[in-house]
Image (cartoon, rainbow, N blue to C red; front, side, top):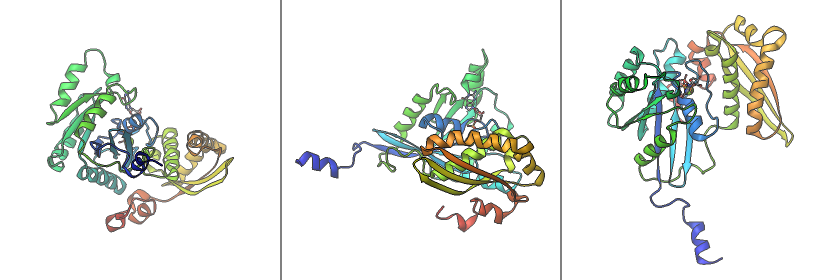
Length: 319
Ligand SMILES: Nc1nc2c(ncn2[C@@H]2O[C@H](COP(=O)(O)OP(=O)(O)OP(=O)(O)O)[C@@H](O)[C@H]2O)c(=O)[nH]1
Ligand SMILES: [Mg+2]
């Protein structure tokens, strides 16, 4: 082995001017935060549905290029909570602001700002210190002719900002420029995660999120929000089969009946849709065993929430 080969083994494999940092992606529910993270990473790591309050907890999306690494934090939508789970979600989102090098506030530019946007912006102003703030005006593809200028300026006027990008997280328009501008603001720093790692959660958790997304997409009203999913067993039996068993928790017997459906028709559909997305991730066929259980009012019960991973106070440490 010659000197330069030895050198390259001991040398870190990122350049001296490598940048890295944290971008907290925040905004109202349903503005497209998770869609944007998935678009940036080029693969699905976060659940996306047309229903508000899909994301329940902060989740990293790790974007790596030779010149730097950006740790995007997808957060639950900030809203006025009506139960303990909602309070937990909003607190988690607010926590993300503290560690951020840049805050990226997503707004839905296809609508004019409403009172929720104004409330959120007031809250952000109080919480954000002097962290740089970028606005991403999302859903530009859904603007109607003639709306663009007035909608953009109405959102731009909401809060002082250090950058503004009009984007479509859905089709990717403007996302490249946004990433480049964010990268330029990242401090010099190391590559924290290996280049092929896109998130810090394991496949088991991703599988649970996919199953929950399918339940949310196939149910209405309260059920999407009353559902939690726990993967109980995740075993790669051999290269031809991964066995996954998961429990779908709901809050009431009537909800259990709906999720199962007539002769099990809905749970079968949910299972088939989830399996189709989990299989390419695990790289084998999946045997997916789904059961539905009732955990009465878990969203207002500290103990049950904690069991489902929404830990409070000191319990959170080490999460
Ligand atoms: N037309 C259009 N729809 C979008 C765009 N981005 C997201 N959506 C849609 O908006 C809905 C909400 O997207 P999510 O990514 O789940 O939104 P979120 O901000 O993560 O929502 P919460 O997790 O509930 O806070 C989904 O139906 C997306 O398909 C976009 O650029 N254009
Ligand atoms: Mg989300």
